[in-house]
View 1 (cartoon, rainbow, N blue to C red):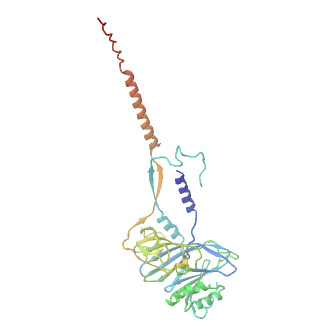
View 2 (tube, rainbow, N blue to C red):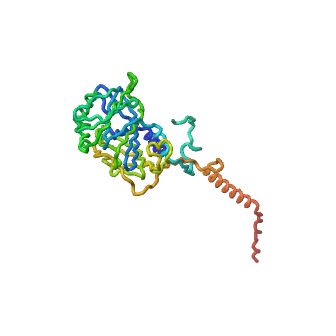
Length: 363
């Protein structure tokens, strides 16, 4: 029982530890006097075979009044504010199924093993630098969005410096493969409209759309992370999807797979058509081993999957623990048998002792 209690305690402690989420589809840049961390990034990717959409929501912390976020995209992208209700609906869809599972013998917390404790545990456009083309500039809520083309990372560095940001050397190195593939970039300046405000908490989601004949989720920039990373990704596509490789992390875990209804807020990402949702979780204990971007493909079959959480309950009959009925009933039967035996013995007639035979006298 002590081992069980210790195991449950370890499980509860583990559930309180929040992992560091990967900022896989972009990179945050702040000035040297500021500090900002991306505590969590939740991403939804929708793909119909021709167009890919990404909906991203960041939860940030720090003292930075503004920051720049860079994301490479394979083709010309459109950017707009997204609907945060999409995330609420997705978390409802993938919630695990709860089932009850009964056990016979009492455990810690059940009578007579329960404790005496009664408490519960509980902006204005900026000209582009040489080599950088600014193909669009929009102000969306707290975001100043610029859509760029760049012929080399140094040109992108120049554009960022003109806007008050410094491109780290490591980030410039990791951007080079995208330049060689002639990808474009979405550069977002995160600047709260309220004077004196800093970037903190959950920001409004951004929605990007671009043409793509492959479902790609950029992850290469997460190589720069200093701590282990976790990726949580919702994928909406015609079929169940899976990554082609683990790209340097652990094998991705499927936490949900199944068809979703065409209505609701998800219709804004699926154009109202029937689609398949695949939810993936992946750990990257050594981010510097990430060797590319995630490319997702259709799985061999659209096999549904849903997590099941079992709620253990003591087996009862009419509110009485079954073990108590069994043990009590067994004791009652034994006592009744003993009593019956005693009574049977008492009711037997007592036979008189046989007469003593006296031997005849000797003549």
